[in-house]
Length: 235
Image (cartoon, rainbow, N blue to C red; front, side, top):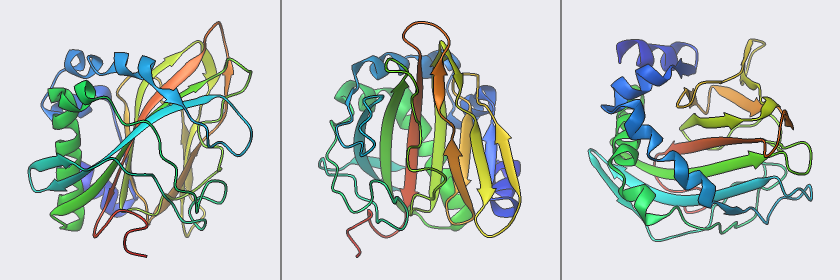
């Protein structure tokens, strides 16, 4: 935990192996793998402005207050255009994450543990959390994990967890200093690898994926923590 919080404070990001994620969340890889099947039940993202059909997703919101994690009433996802030039300013109402997924003990442990990390770094005990399940596929050719390009999300912390890669190439993750020249490039390969970001300190993106077989796709879980309110509520 000390190394994790130090990395976030000094470089603005931390990359954790699946084994470290399990240790942090107090669960096993088998526990986390019980979540993976729910990515087969995602709904099409009908808001893509590039005309693509490569993204499926679900989205739900939570409030984390200390050790308590409470799901809110379903609401639209909103970002300002200064953080998402492609899809900002739109109230995008996606299908909610399935109740069985939210009730899974591995889901609860994962979100609570990562929220505790955010509290240790920032000292904020109450967080407004958004959870996004993504599947990017290559059925029409190229799939774009971040069609908006390199960006920040307008929150305090962002977690990107790789749930799985199947019959694809590409999908390189890139993290850059928001106000400096330094950057890192790597490709997350193992399921439940975690990238945790201080959203004010760094910008991030993932490069397009290409098919390397039939039904190629990349599944990720993206979680964000924001103090004070959900985006759009405090504008």
